[in-house]
Picture (spheres, helix red, strand yellow):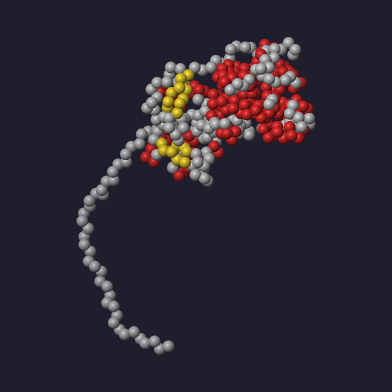
Length: 367
């Protein structure tokens, strides 16, 4: 371990501790951990240039990129059991507080550039509050108030001291900061851990194009001669694989030199927007519009019905196209009603005679 090259302290100002050694032993000797780290290192070159540029522009240590590595493994779709998502694993309320949109149609936690901007602002706030990068990362993991409570209770603001006190910090937080330093050391010494430095996946070169509302990635891919998964990889902030239909045009990334001829693309069907009301479910909306639930889920890219909450705007086919949208055929005008065929004239019928009313006087009441 003494022969390992450590990251420069200005790049990642964290101190060595016995927990760092334990993580390094795991990454070196246990194949399953080594495979996980190998996958992280393979994706690192894709996002490193952009993320480091954002961190340095905010005057932050570039080694903070390893926080994103252990949080998500550089996977845009990573989602924790506590609803933390995206590259930096923001919870929805924290993400919105730092300017990210988290909605049904858009999740900017999954955008590498915008989420890194938000993470940089959050790191700067944490460091300004605690004055130590170790406590700042602890606050990133456990929350600001958990760290403030520990500092007040045990009368120390030294991270390693708090780790040594029983219940000084949450157990996960005592592991979190050493793990960041450990993966940074592995990145500097890949051969020592059986990891081949093969250059990884380089950043994807792309162009920005303007696309109208409600356009599916599949339609764009067909127009540009691409695979739809290429658009998904370049635009992870749109989890429904469709541009948001509840606003104007948006900017999408497409492979470099392939962004022409998209101005006239529409939603790919005759749809209307319906806003979900309190108490409504996707199945109920589908029944109300005489539509199969699976078809409605496919149109809107819904994986789980619980994702559709009150206030969400979703697509449904317009009435005249519902039957057509289910079969892929164009709607046909219905035939005009035909008049009934004329038959022989009906014979007149004589009125039936009625019996004459009785004129006899009524009998008096003798009660």
